[in-house]
Amino acid sequence: MHVVTSICDPDGAIQTLPPQEVTSPDELPVNATQYSFDTEEEAMAHYSELKPQPSFLFTADCHMKRRTWTNSTLLQGDAPTSLWRLVLNALDIVKDCRTLVIGGDLFDNNRPASQDMVDVSEVVKMFCQTFYIRGNHDSVKPSYLEALKDTSVNGGFGDIICIEPDKETDGYYTHFHRISNHAYIAGIQWMPSDSQFIELLKGVVSNWHSRKRDGDKLYLVLHCTFKHLLNFDGAYQLDANMLKDIVGDEDINVLVGHIHTRDTLVYNDHGNYIHSPGSTYPLSADKMQTPCYGSIIMAETGNIIPVDCNVRKYVNVNIADLDKQKMDLDRFIIPYKPNDHDLPTFINLVVPEDYDKQIVLPENDSYVWKIDRRLAALKERVAQSNKVYTIEDAVREELQNEANRDMVTEMAEELLIADDPVAVLNEWLEFWGVRKATC
Image (cartoon, rainbow, N blue to C red; front, top):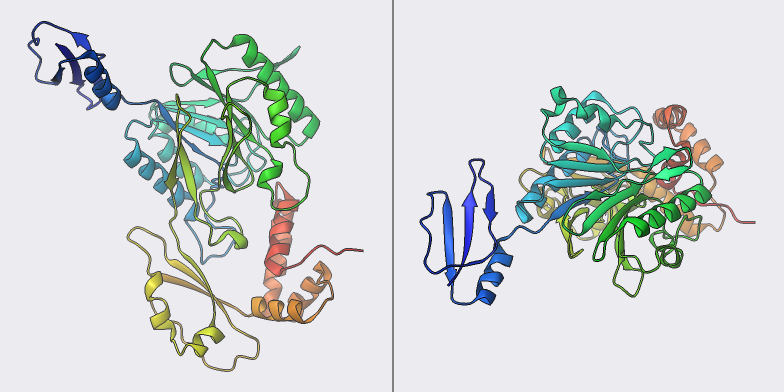
C-alpha cells in the first residue's frame, strides 16, 4: 500500500509529504490527513496534484501615483487600486504564490509621495519575498523600495531584494536567486546606453553559463525596448534575433517591462519566450480600451497565467451619435455601470463645436464625465486638411481659449519637474493629436 500524507501547521499552511510504501496506515495526529493507493503511480499522481508548484507574480509599469496619465483630478486611485486588485486576484488563482517580481517603473517618478510608499508597503507585506529592478521612471539608486526593508515599515514580513548586477572593479557580478528546485531569477535595470546594456546582458548570460547546473533555467527580468513590442519603426535596444544570438542554447525566459503592451513571443527552438505583462492600468489615451493584466509564472514549467487587474471602465462616445440613435445619456450609461469595488466609469463625451443643445449629465457617483470639444474639432480638422498639425498650432490654439491656458501652464510645470521630459511631452502631443512633420 502507498500513502500520501498532508500535514497542516499552526499557521494554516499545508505540507504534503512524498508517497511512501507502508504495510499498514500509521496513527496520525489530528492535523494530518492520509490518502491510500494500491499502486505507486496512483500515489504519485495524487501527490503531484496536492503539492504546491513554485510560482511567482510578475508585474511591471505600475507607475504608482495618485492621478492617472491625464493628471486630471477626475481620475485618481487607479494605480494603487489596480495593483491591489492584481495581488488579490493572483492569490485567488494560486494561493501559495508568495513571490512578487517587479520589472521596473513601480513608481512613476524618483520622488514618490508618502501615500504611494504606504500603498506599496501594504502590497509587499503580502509576499514572502519581493524581487525588483529599477525602470527609467524610478531609476534613482537606492530605490525607494529599499526603505521598506526597515522592519518598522514592513513588519519584518518578507525579503525585498534588488536583482540587478553589482558593479565590481573588473566588471559586473550577477546574483542568481533560487526560486524553485531548478529555477533562478536575475535582472538588469533600465540603462540609457544601448551599448552598455547589451554588454551587460552578454555578461549576465556568460555568468549564468559558468554557474548553472544541468536542468536549471533562468528568468531574466529586463526594462528595455524590444523591436516586436513597438508599434512604430523607431529606436529599440533588442530584437528577438539579437537575444537568440546572445543567449545561445541556455534555458532563459525573459520577462520585460517598459512598453506597456501585453505580449509573449517564443524566440528560440527550445520554447523560451520574451514575456511583457503590460501595465497595471491604462497609461495613455490610446490604451483606454486595452485590458490590463499581470502574470503568474509557474517557475518549473514556465507556464504563464494571466491575472486581471482592471478596475475602471473607459467609454468614448460622440453625443451626436447618441442623438441619431435617439438615446439619452441616462439610458446610454446603463451597460457601463461599474462592478462592485471598481472605480467610477470614465466617460469621455465628445461634443462637436457647433453642437447647440443643452447637455444635462446624469447625477450619479458611479460615473466620471469629461466633455471633450477639442477632440471632435481636431478629428474634423485632420479629416478635412492635408496640412500637418504641429505643436505650434496646438499651443497657439490652446492659448486662444482662456479656459485652456491653465492646461498649457500645467504642461510647462510637468516638464520642469519631470524625470523624463520627452515622455511627458510625447503624452501631451498624443493628447493634442500632433503628428511628426515630414519633409
